Amino acid sequence: MMMFEGHDPYLVALSVVIAILGGYTGFGLAARIRGTPGVSRRLLLAGAASFLAVGIWTMHFVGMLAAPIPADTVYLVLPTIISFLICALVVGISLFFVSIGEPSLRRVVWAAALLGAGIASMHYVGIHGLTGNFAIAHDTPMILLSIGIAIVTAYGGLRAFLARQDGVRLIASSIAFGVAVSGMHYTAMHGMHFVALSETAHRHAGGLAASPQLLAVIVAVLCFVIAAGFLLSLVPDPRRQPVTVAIAVDPAPPAAIADPQPALREPAMPSPRLMPAPLGGLGQPPRAAPAARLPVEGANGTHFIDSAEVRSVRADAHYTRVHDGTRERMCPWSISEAEAQLDPGLFVRVHRSHIVAIPHVTFVRKEGDGAVIELDGPSPHRVPVSRAKIAEVKARLGLAKRHA
Image (cartoon, rainbow, N blue to C red; front, side, top):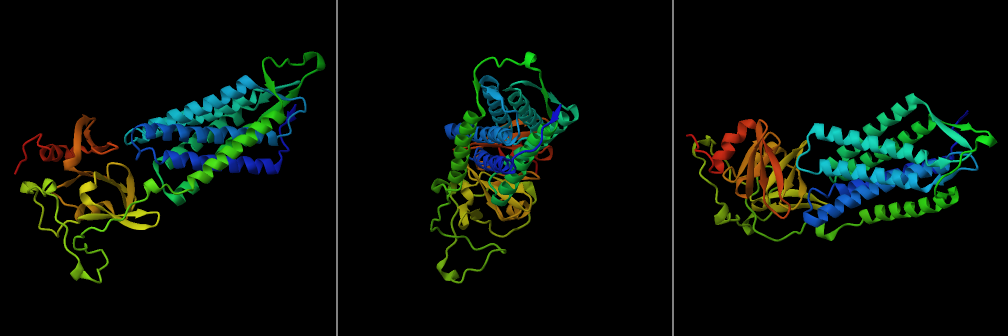
C-alpha cells in the first residue's frame, strides 16, 4: 500500500487559483440573477452554474495531474464525463433553490448539503475513473472529513451568492471558496491509497480511455475558458451603470450636504397618481417633507433615483438595498433612516427588514404566520410581511376596514 503524496507544488497552486477564478466568475454571474428578468435570468443561472462546475471540475483534474500517479494510469472517459455532469447538475439545482424569493436559512442549509454532497460525489466518481495495474482504497475518516469540508464550502459559496454584488465581499468569498474546494480535494487525496496488483491480476480498462497527456490538453483549454470568463466579468456592463439625469431636487434632508446655490433649486412636485394618502388613524406625528429621491451607490459614485420608482427597501447590515423593479442597488441609509425619509402615504414598513411602496403592490397571500406580497416591475419580486403588519397592509390595500 502506498500513501498518495508528493504533489507538484506549482500545479497545486494552479489548481487553487483556478478554483478561485471559477468561484469569482460563477458567483459574480449568480449575484445578478435576482435583478434580471425572464430569459436573461435563466441564462445567468446557466452561466453561473457552468462556471462554478467547470472551476470545481478543472481544479479537481489539475490536482490529479499534480499527483504522482502510477505511470500506466489512464482515465476512463465515461466516469470522467459523469463526474462533470454531477457537478453541473447539483450546482445548478442549488443556485435555483436559493434564487427563488427570499431564501430561508433552512433552504440555504439544504441547498448547501446538496451542493457539498454533489462536489464530493464528483470527486470520488472522477477518482474511480482512473484505471491501471492497481486498486484504489480510501480512509473512511478522510472521506467523512472531505464531505464535511465540501458542505461547509457550499454553504459559504451560497452565502456569497446571497450577498449579491459587493466587490470586497465577493473577492473574499471567492478566495475562501477556492481554498476550501481545494482543501476538500487534497483532504480526500490524503486518504487515498494505491494498492499494487500482481501482473496476473491486472485490471482491464473497459470502455473508452484517455491518457494523462490528453486530459492535460483538455484541462488547459478549460483553464483558458475560466480565465477568459474571469476577465470578461471585470469589464463594466454599460447597461448596469446608473444614468444621472438632471431633474429638480427636493430640499435636502437633514443628513444631506447643503447645496452651495440653494436659489437655483426648486422642490420636485410628486406625481398626482402618487400623492400621499391621508394618514388617518395611524397616529403619525407631523414630520418633515419626504425625500423625493434616494441616494444609491454606483461604480463611479453616488447617484439618485426618484422615490416613485422605488418598489421596496431591504435592510442589509447598516445599509439598505433599494429595488426599483429591475434590480437592487445599495443605499447608504439605514432601514430606520429610510423609513423616516420616505413618504408614509406611499411607503409602509411591513417587516423589521423591509419597506414597500403600496402603489406597486400587485399580489398578497397568507403564508405561515405572516404573508407575502409581490411588487410590480420588469423583474417582479416578493417581500415577506410580518404577522404584526398584516392588518395594516390589508387596510392600506383596501382589503380591510381601517380602524380609527
